[in-house]
Length: 378
Ligand code: F6R
Image (cartoon, rainbow, N blue to C red; front, side, top):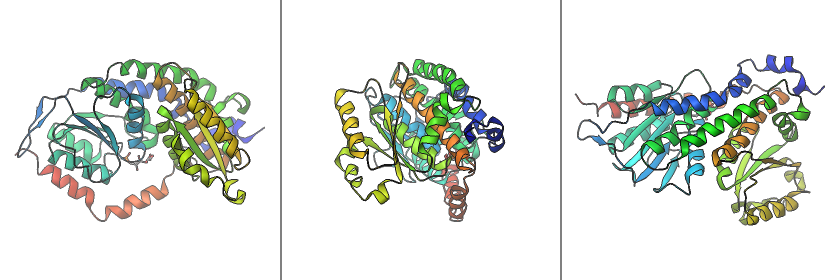
């Protein structure tokens, strides 16, 4: 019996209940959406030296790091061909120059304590941008409550990457509330329903032969996964790369087609001694056009003798979000099964914590908090 079919061993290895948390993703997605539905967006928030006025945004910036930024990428791919204003996911301390009072800035930080996000948040306040936060608490939550800024509170106690449905689902709802894109609520419902159907087939009790996530984990075992996405699967490719890093503790990379046909593909001409260490995971959509289908076919043929393995994951469902989540869900669980197959702890985040701890000594988060607090009305 392959290790991944030993349910008892899996449950023992899953000390932190991550499998169960993943199997609850459909509910988490609906709950995240509901929390945003309940949010009341104020007309105005008073601060020292001028108010924030909430109205029709002329641009949208989603600020966050790591697992908290991933939902922003999904939103961009979900809406790129319908969003009437520029939208950007920003993973850094300082905001771009164009961000001003007409920009909707959604600060996403699961812990609410990530210094890059807090610094950018305080800059957005100083520029009187229309700020909304999504967090489970922390400094970000406190500041929003004190300043009476719109805040979507999500349940705490998870690793940020596990909270993706809670962190993502409010975003499409906010886009609707701000009058930017319609018809997204329905897609969130449909994606949750599809994941619900899929969950039984991906559960630990289902053996490798019938379990797409376990199968994918075993296909990737022993290699460095390079994930290729195209169109609205770009964000999914990026996210899965992160999950192979964070859950499975392996190096992993992502890129997109057609872009990789213009540079990265030459890298695969290198010595097999190197290229054989990688596997290529192609994310596919049944609706992809003929040009992309051809590009994937040609690229796979060029890579065939160079990489350890070529694997494909096909999207299911009707709406765009269903298709995105159908691949995401399999890949997320695969990253967990891969951790168990490798005998590593998917929950731990030693290096991330170490960097955060050392950086905290510079006191940037505290400075950002103080800057925000100076804007409080007396
Ligand atoms: C950890 C994870 C990280 C965090 C990132 C930012 O599970 O996914 O990428 O998301 O370090 O932290 P938060 O999300 O608390 O702002």
